[in-house]
Length: 372
Image (cartoon, rainbow, N blue to C red; front, side, top):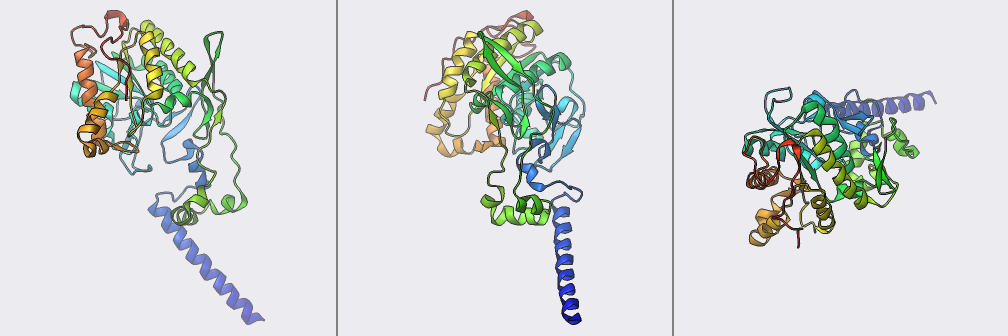
């Protein structure tokens, strides 16, 4: 009996030692040696994920300040300076001096999947020769992007503001929780926007027993993620809570709010539409009317993108990989640069049809709603 007990103990001890070797090795490789939370939390709380995010009382969450690492889903270089502004790849760790353009938006603006110098604000800075401040934030809705602009403009004092959006950002305005974090949202009362501020807590998210225990192991997490991903993360991806279905109405009223903010702040503003690959423009076709009604210049590259797809499908496809590739960001920045120069929207450029002194925004009459 004693012999069986000793043999059993030795087997268990060898298994434990083997597990510890694999566990420590996996943690070192993944650069998570001292991460003691459940690894599945990264898949339903953005502030605990590989994204450099932290809670914010006005925006729900925002990028961390003074951060530099490659620990993200794409292992790309991400450098954040003051106020969570993403670096454009320069050596400076401070906000550049004026003149400057502030760019806000979601992950397409932040530059998911590309390095600091490959996001479209970085390319815009090169093509215009003017500092472009990348205030984009992964996962933001149109409501959060505009609130971030209202937060950053008084501090950074840019000479021009670009609010970029994808079509899904309109739907994101309908959520009070998204990416596993409470977010601000607007409802409409008597034709006016009513702001609901986010709670400063992490929403509860229950795990079943197996994931609640095994999820603390980096080794088992990576093992199941690689060989049984659907089972391992099923039902545990970043969840949201939808509170209404008036995303378009809210977005249209947000355009009026943006125009009013532009006038009050004296910062000329433009709205930029961004597209995923082969994405039809239905939502933007409606939103574009609201942008123009608010007297905000609108850059919509849909027609140019469709012409490129027809002329050179392979070239068009190379612009996207879920988000935009580095090449896609460069092409978008080149098209945006031409639009801004043609309409006199570049800070320091002689005043033209694009805007007038004092921040009054003049509509662009030369570009109609995008059509397939």
